[in-house]
Length: 68
Image (cartoon, rainbow, N blue to C red; front, side, top):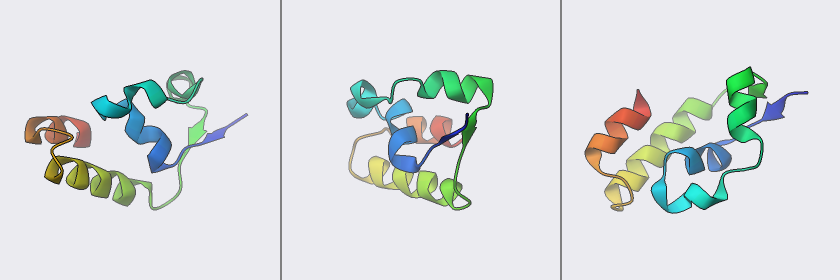
């Protein structure tokens, strides 16, 4: 069974202040390759990283690592 992941679920994996909100089973589904994302997923992630950096939720160095 595949898990459809959107940016709000995925952001908890790289935003420290959301670390406690990771969906149960998400890391395992990603590791197994059982996760699918919408076509615009990368645009949402880029926007989330940019907004988090601008609001001080993520250092610029962290943004570069998250985007890689």
